[in-house]
Length: 550
Image 1: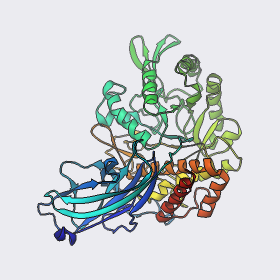
Image 2: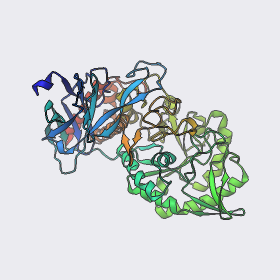
Image 3: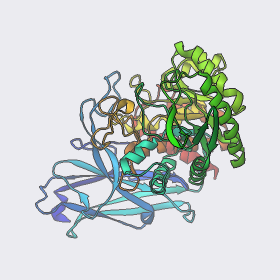
Image 4: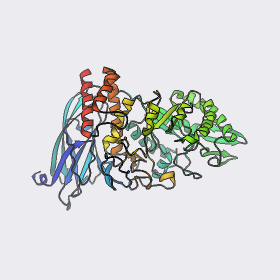
């Protein structure tokens, strides 16, 4: 230990600090509190000032306290290769560089100890129901692979005897099924696909998401006009002359699998092309025993043939939805991000669909209030920057989203070069603004912009130079599924913050909780204390108030 004491720096820091290779982390902590059913995170940051010369790694031993319920992952570095215009000053760095993001298991070679760099381990605490409330101290000791003690640390976790309530938000982050098939070399919706998909769903729900984009037909998203993405169609269509028959076997299997693995709400994929719905989605049918594309970019959205198709399709789909008892959990999309000039066309699309789906709502990402004002969308999903346009009308069914923007005015977003607090604060913001849900377009988009080529997300975090790094995905592919990211954990922490506020509300009322947020300095989606320490302290205050009630 004495030899290593001069060679190794080691400290425990907040999960809200991004540990940069060339910057000593500052947010040291030795204590945190958690509720019984949440996942609590902290980091072990370390710096090696000796050239390895045969000492290439280390291992971590944890003792006592909650050690058996702690999972340790290595924070690997990812390239932040496309950064935002410096429109505000709240970012980790604003130039090309490497940032911690993929969280990978500790392998046989041990924990890497590169010379002259700060690196970090991500420690997550998840408790079984048998653990009781109380204060637990855990000892964490770093050893060389030769068995020499390198550093010893202690961390105290107070477990509060209360549980986070189930969220009342609908939370979705679009799954891209062609990317699963391409990345893992499996045939879509085969048994091999489901073996991998199960791991994607596990991490998806562990991130807090509970609504799943479901591809009735290949989702017309992020596709160049006139081009096609891999067919990802769950409904088998048989065309006989001008008549259509449908086989819903694969759809029912998919839905049953998703619902059994933590999904609560179903959002059926878009029925018209992106940015206004001018054309039909790609739909493949069996025609005279041969599989053919029967609708796509070459078919106008309002074509009479597509209307006839929808007439037959929705009659059959309605029976499936009712048979599975999920009508009240189903949502439909028409066209993603339509512009204001597309209102007349969008109105025609709605008319074609709404008469069939009845009370099942239509939801779409949009930025123009006129769509809702004219009764064209049941659930508007507004970009954070357009939120105020909708909020002034006191809507009760508003969702919010962010994506490749906004990048300025301190809006929350999940780019690699943004502080983790800028990801996590969304939970507090959604509580105060009382929205009903959140949407993001990319859980696992491993393509270039408009899906022209595949990309390796470990080397291209920017959709091949198109979007700010980190926009396209929250998880990295592994051999059999995915690895979470630092950003994914921060996203879940934000959703947990929301649920903690809802729990406190059940004790003291919403008005008093909102007052706490006001006093903390949060207003809308741009005004909040831009300070990780302040964020952590506020959450600890919420936990203390909950503790007083239990």
